[in-house]
Length: 179
Image (cartoon, one colour):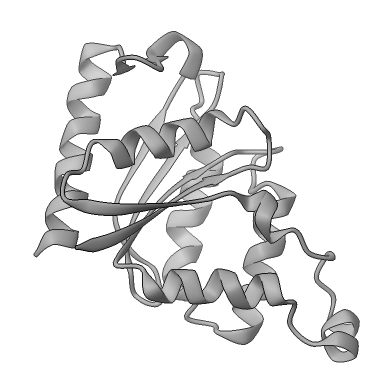
């Protein structure tokens, strides 16, 4: 059975991006879902001096191993000031120091959402541009605007046109990991 990592790119206990990533994963059948909580990978802020003095933290080594053992990744990015959250960026920094190809050519479904109409499109675009340089095989990307207006825990995406578009993205990703 294929293993899919589900990651919300935020450490917030009520992260809407974690909720969105989990919901996306629940729509794919016949897979093993592995949910990662960024809080389990808290490390000192990356610096070359810290790396030289103490090496790569165990958390970064564990994060990379989990990625390497997966068959695909669903990642929903939170946007802080137009970019990644500092916790997520720090994990990228530490993990890429041990393996530049940190995404290991795994198929990735990139998602982003926010309470506002922008739907975290800035961070999504940034990841679409940057992640291939870190070994990402981005299968699809999707931004959900106005999370609280367009999503419910019971139904998922409630806006019909947004749901139709999202279902196509899920099908594309699902087909890529099952082939």
